[in-house]
Length: 273
Picture 1 (spheres, rainbow, N blue to C red):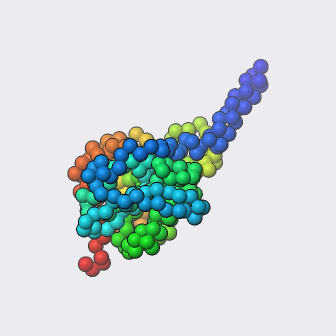
Picture 2 (cartoon, rainbow, N blue to C red):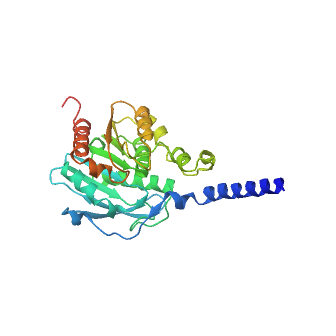
Picture 3 (cartoon, one colour):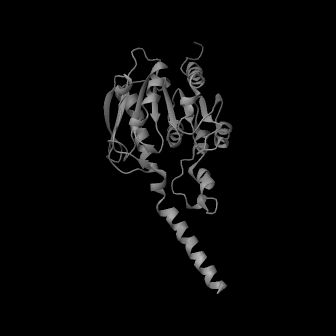
């Protein structure tokens, strides 16, 4: 009897492990196809941009120009929704004197394809190439910004190009490390096919880094921010916020904006200027 119970429990556990392995894409990526707002909602002029990634997928983004830009921010958003849910952030970046370029990953918003880690990296590379090749924006005038899952995308790209700076907001060290918080009974570090290892990527970054995180973050513990800060090369800084994972930057108000402004002043000022 006890043997049968043990065998049944083992079979159930193995099935759950298999489920986590096979269906993790649907757990990580939560795209929305409908755009319920545009930058115009916040009174911002914008351009629709369509890019074709290396795997032949057509992705969509918005370029939000500033009349007198001090630099350009390349925005990688989190795992849920689409670019239409980031209007408040685009307005903040505009007030900070930046052009902004935000893209939807494979399968998000009006972009084609299917979400995936490698797909987001192709999206990031296509967005960077658009800015430096078509827009002819100097790499030293581009700030990479990644929020939550987007931090993994931004860190990956920053290790391969030479931006003026890298901002990781509400980011995690890696998917396996974060998943261990939610699935402590499972060997998620072995099961994870999706990794976004930002901590490892930071070793290859040679640009100034700003880590932004709320001490109250209920989704990504603040310990991840400290680990990312420790892994980041100098010069680096840590901006602590209060509030939830998705609203900390709004609740922080001027503290958040001033923290970004101070980092931009350092990152976008030429050496010796």
